Length: 174
Length: 429
Image (cartoon, rainbow over all chains, first blue to last red; front, top):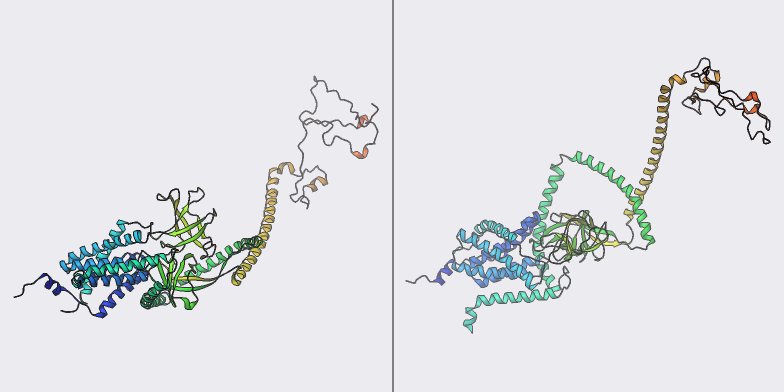
């Protein structure tokens, strides 16, 4: 009788998505983000593309795929801004990689794990964006406003929980 | 070697992706030297693809929202329309008066500008556009509008609302354009403080505010002062409203400069429609000239009407004052001016109103207590005097005695009567 190894457990819990979901969900997240920001400017504190990046990364459990997914979503997000293309791309690539790596080792379907994960990744994303702007782009006027970033992380976590539940339905049955 | 790639596949993918993006960033940051400038061709292409993917959805949802709002505001929510109409008509009347008052100043200003050969650029043509989307993040404050190069828009054209400036076009696609708001961190504009005429550079801040941080402390600059575009940046025409000064504080990071925070004239967070300035010209537009002439004519009419009204008011005031005098004086001097039955007829007639003396009051001197030769009535009439003749003794009238001291007491000697001989009358003496 074969014993359940680490690898086999990982393979059992790896999820896949249809190409339509893979393509449409990130686009929908970006469009929704844009529309919400236009509807009420304070909603621009949310980062729906980040939530989608985390979801796909932890569900697929492949750091390489997570990196590429994050990069694609981040680049698309950058293309809509006035920033140089690659700022969000780099941040979300790193988030995708780390989220996938964590997804291998912990139970990401657990509610508490999801809360901690979303809160932590939101803060990490803000930190990476700050470092890219400050160190790579040399924007000296930018500062890390921790209070604002904590509120952003909390808001993203609150929004992420129902979105994760909805996106769970898009997973392909095993 | 194969095992190395297999083993470190994930890390290698991450490093490669990051490296490629870092190189991409380096190229982009190096190419457009100026902050807020448009991207290079390859970057624009990538933006074009993404914008072309996202904007149809934005247009669709914007259209739905627009139709819902249109239906609601035009067919359902008409409860206060009459009142609003009345208010607007009152507002129009008030603005006409204001326009008339300002027209003369404006015309004078134009004459002075012509004298100084000053080149002013007026907004000649604009394209109205609707806001269909945003960047979706608070790290970059841009808008997307539903007009692009097909409608004649170009990069770096100014975007405004009737309230003030909004930003400039950063990227222009065939049917969509990206507007960089003035409160974005990479944004800038040349401005002029309206009262103090100090020139400055406006910048966006991380928190979405607009600030001036290139001025040293100046006691003349006060909160509430209006800020206008200076026209020096070659993007925004001169004289457009930017906002008002909200606060002034020392900049701790860049001493001795101050941070002047402005309150934008336009609500940059809630924009629905904007105007893109597609052309400027050296003289006023035909419509503006027509409005100005109309205002000047109205001002002239108003000043003429005001002069006539002032004249009428002055006349009425004079008439009223004379009436007051005529009413009051007789009552005070009723007893004194009462007609004396023994007085001659001419005296009674003098009390009657005449055109020269509308009040009909003849001033009557008080009786003299100690009369002398200068007392009115004691001098003989000029017709009875002969030039060069001496004063006849009998002609010097005895001063009339007061009724109170009609005769001096018996023990008091009568004062000696000095013989009056006018020196001029007899130069030989």
